[in-house]
Length: 212
Image: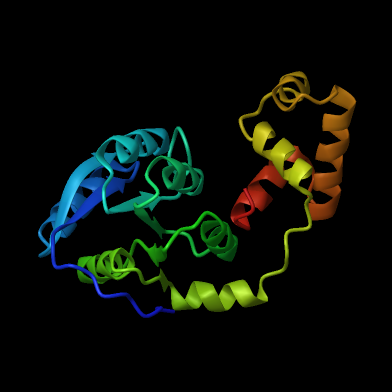
């Protein structure tokens, strides 16, 4: 799904790359850096570091993986929109999870594409979003239309997100400023709605669906 792009200047596009797998990141840097009109100005393996670099360097485009330490790519995209509003974000992912697509669009991401695409395709997506267009993987866009809505409330999602590290209820309660009983109720409700055995399985199911 490609929206028409605005006319853009022919200058070099500065690119920030964030990918936690060193070998994959190195391949992206080498391949995209060799593309005409694209200059990789920074690279990192952490989402929080990507936000810092975006604020300091103000690149034209940031290409982010979803699964990274510090901050995931979608949370990093939201913060980059605050610290570097002119920077356009492209998400690259190895997961075909439509829930991620919905979160990406809500975060203001301009491109959403699979990692398995050739460098020439990724470069074209970067150019497209830099010029004011949008690129969304067609298969993910089609899947998103038929994906069921998340049955969990925002508070249930917050509680599962806090539980993802394996933290005890007492710590989750302090983190979210809730009583321990309320945390247990939210976790129990999430487990019931997702028809799973426990909160750990609930976290995995929610992640698989792209809701966390």
